Every structure is written in C-alpha cells, then in structure tokens.
Length: 191
Image (tube, rainbow, N blue to C red; front, side, top):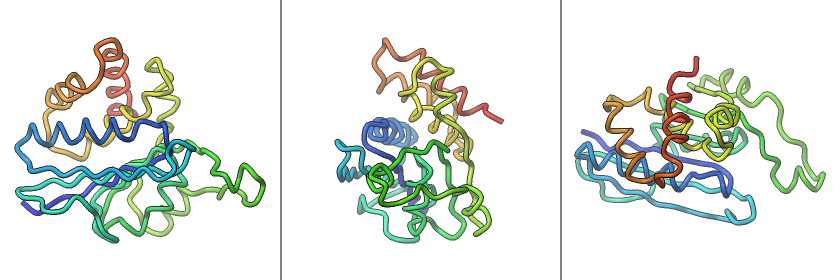
C-alpha cells in the first residue's frame, strides 16, 4: 500500500492535536505504520496549527510536501484556503465552515475573504464543508468540533466504526466520552 497523507489544519486551541492523536491511534490499530508530526506555530495566540499524519505499509518521514496530501482536514475555512497547495490533484477536503478572524482582520488591515467554499469548488477542489461548530454545540460542547470533523472524515476510510469508537475511548477522558461519541455521530451522519 502506498503511503497516504493527511494534513490537519486549524487555529490554536481548536483541538487539532487531539484529533491527530486519535487518528494516529486508529491507524496503528489497523496495522499501518504511522508517523505524526505537529507544527504549532503561534498556536497559543490563535495562530495556525498544522499536523501531518502519514500512514502506510512503511512510512519513513513524518512530513507532507506540497501536492502530496490525500486529505486536508480543516477546523476553519481560511486555514483550508491557506493550505490548498499541499493537496493532491484528486485530494479531498473535509472542513468546518467556521470563520475565525486572523490578526490582520482583527486590526482592520485586511478583510476576511468571502465565499471561500464556493471559490474552492469553482476551482475544481473536492470539498466536504459543514458547520461543525453548530454540530459540536448540539453534542454538548463547542470544543467538540475536532470530533465532529473526525466523524465526517470516517466516510472516506474503510475502517469499521467500532475501531473509531475504541480510539475515542483510548484518547478522550471518560467524563467527556459520551459527548464526544455524540459529536462523532453527528459529524458522521450530517447530510
């Protein structure tokens, strides 16, 4: 099996590191060699956070280069646009439609780009976009956006649901497990 590449992008504090940990656990449980690399940037200040998850029969490097990502999983729509150059020609985007203003927008130096999903679709990108924040709130916490996204991502993998559930159980504190299982289901089943 050739190596597959997933880039998880977001803004600091959104839970992308937990998402990559759950995904790494899941893929290891399925017998893949897995490499996870985290690049924090200015995550403590609401800046970009990117995580690379690579898996296959044998993976030698944790880094994903331009044009190599099979998937971009994004917690924020502008972050999706920022990392498009990493996506393979036939790659898949799974994204939250939430907008979080970056510093240039907050200070008034720039405007937040409009209609990003439509613009990406018009350029031929395969994009699965949904309001993960609303689904996370429905599950019981706005902090569950990461798990909603993993639920959605599960559509693109031939991995049994019980394996996803076991990875949630292994990585989420018990007191938050039911909430996260609900968030996963909402993401998975959203039309």
